[in-house]
Image (cartoon, rainbow, N blue to C red; front, side, top):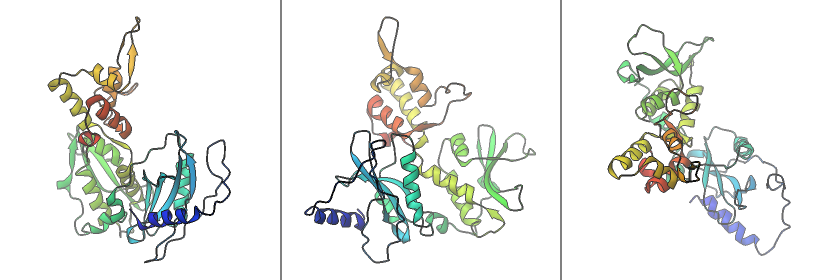
Length: 326
């Protein structure tokens, strides 16, 4: 638990003896009428008193608050937590030390303007012990990605490196070309598409980190887009479904379960013309990548982490960690 959290708790306890007027509430969104404020960067070595940037009510009517607390190396963690218990901390963003403090308020504003329900992963102990993008600094600049590190999947060869751009400056991007025709031109692809094609996070993440470290001082290569893609990949609630698909297949083959039974346990029900219930097997097949979504030609390799957790816990009776690729 960061020191700023205990500081907030002490302040809350001290102020309870002198009640203050209850803040007005916006009936439309359930937000307290409190403007977003720029968060001053805490002084090194000082215990910072952290005040919430904003408050809102979740779908269950509980009051939650958004705040920014100091992290390692001058970074800043933007959190969403229960305003009453100060628990259930969720990570909105981990801002680097060179980002302006105003970005914390911007992150909160965009978060509250997004659709409900709002989902973020829980704060992990490692979040308090790492610096954003520090892995790029640890990579050896003398080791750029090489042709030996090319990846092959689904009839294509993938590699990361500078790609020509309409402007004079090249873009650091992932690209691909058909494996049977290496003389073909390389086309740019998104980092998430590479991971989805291989259905593994590694070694794609390691090669991306190495490339970002190698070209970070190169003024002739822009890496902002790939860096943003890497950050989104590492923080997105959309995860690979390969391990979940394997667990569902194993439950059917080894445990005697059926697709209908698993879907029924998840609460996804369909009824025949006589009103008899059964599990919606097509829903399950699409979520685990056994059947294409409507209008798509191939199954998706991705699933939302909330859906993965539902299928794991309710449908299979296992922990979500057992069916989520790391």
